[in-house]
Length: 120
Image (cartoon, rainbow, N blue to C red; front, side, top):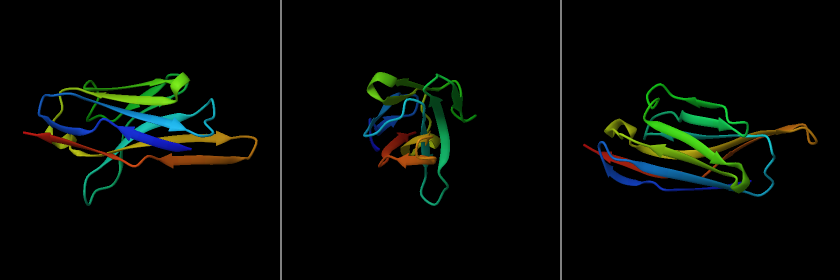
């Protein structure tokens, strides 16, 4: 599985950005796709996640400002980020998790990361 993220950039505080992550390869029909972020010297933290069934979860710090969505037919997950704050500045990574029953193994794949910079 390969993940290609795009949509990062520089934006002023209060602005918006939309990230996209397209998955390709052997995509299983049941999976979780998520966005994480990481600042230099910090740990990678979950921002938002969404299952193929539509269940979502958000970090408290982004609840109400960010919205995750996905197009299962395109194997693509999106992150709409509104009312951005300087503390949202980070490298954002796309993540794909699934379990293949036929192989009895789990997959945990990462995209290359896209930089989001919010100026004050």
